[in-house]
Amino acid sequence: MSIEIWLSGFFYLLILVLQIVMAAFGYILEPMPKHYESDAKLQNFDNNPKRFKISVVLALIEHFSIIALVMVLYIAFSPYNIIFGIVWTIFRMGEGLIQIYIEKDYWGLLNIAKKYSATSGTEKDSLFDSYCSILQTKSSRFVFAMICWSIGTLAFSILLVTYEVVPLFIGWLGIIASIFIGFLNGINLVKPNLKVYEVLSSIGGLVSILFEILIGGWLLFFA
Image (tube, rainbow, N blue to C red; front, side, top):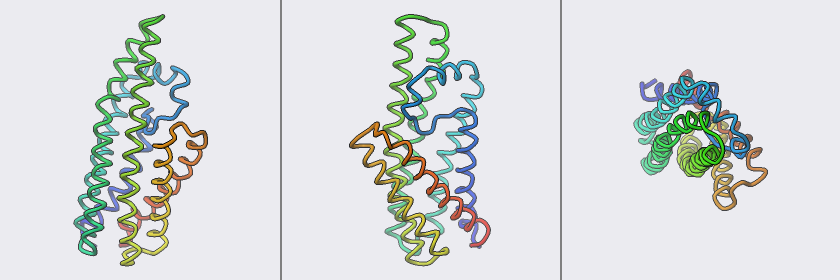
């Protein structure tokens, strides 16, 4: 086993673990309408500023891990097909960079939360509107990041199936997950706030997580 393949599996699993820990610390990876319905999340940021800061640091580590994953995947698998290698590198690199850029505004939520707890009336409403605006912007950018994930993962999964690099069911699962996620987020671009989006997003998320657990585990332990 080459070190690049081992690292590919390691980063796949590391990213998943980081996402779980981020969520445990209160990080909002994909803002949903439920986050705009009350100020509970905003107040929680002010009540636990250390947890908020840790969650953002973990998020940044996760985003840079995506870029590291893309690089080792390119080294390990692009010799099979350079075109597919270029496609997944461009789009998954784009995914990571979009996510990193998002954090600039997201970090500002802590300052908004502090002011929100100390004010009332019209100013309080204005701060809550700012909070919602940042999350809505994050949500729209996250859609583009997921479309990048979809295209990049589709290219990589097609390579896995075409050259039988891993068991075929893993590659086909990646194809299914990437098409589903791409189609769903494409619809979300055209028609945001679709009522069934949250349910479908959860289903797509579970399929993509299963794929990344399987591909990560296979590359780390069996490749």
